[in-house]
Image 1 (spheres, rainbow, N blue to C red):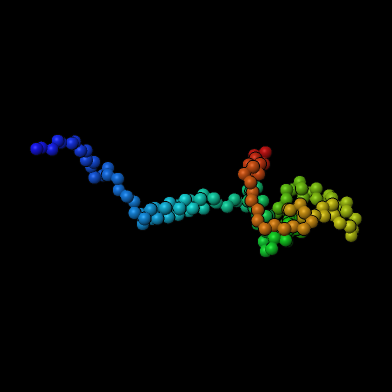
Image 2: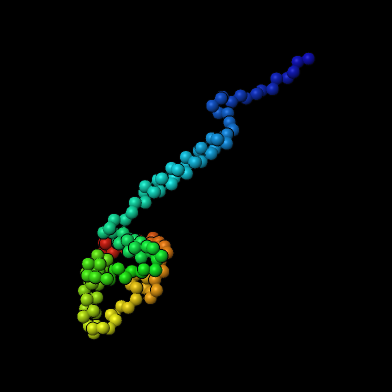
Length: 141
């Protein structure tokens, strides 16, 4: 007695499903993570010093140094610091206000201008994209 022939489809070797070994899976996942993290670091270049986002980042980085309780008094401590961190019009307005202040009195701004507080406590900071867009727009104006 003859067996009936059943048609069998054989896949070529390059189309066969092969199981991925654990070693291949771990290697592929690790390589993918390394590529993803390295490309993010490369594309996220620090902002330039003349860029408004760079200026804000520099101010808050310095304010967060140490314990973070130093605040932003360095921004207004002398004329050179004011010229570095503040606009020309704000420096002029500040000088006008200081000229009106009687000797021995506290100036018109008696708080930390960076944190807008009496007792600054800056542990970390983040410049949100909405602020970045606003600062970037200030260059075009």
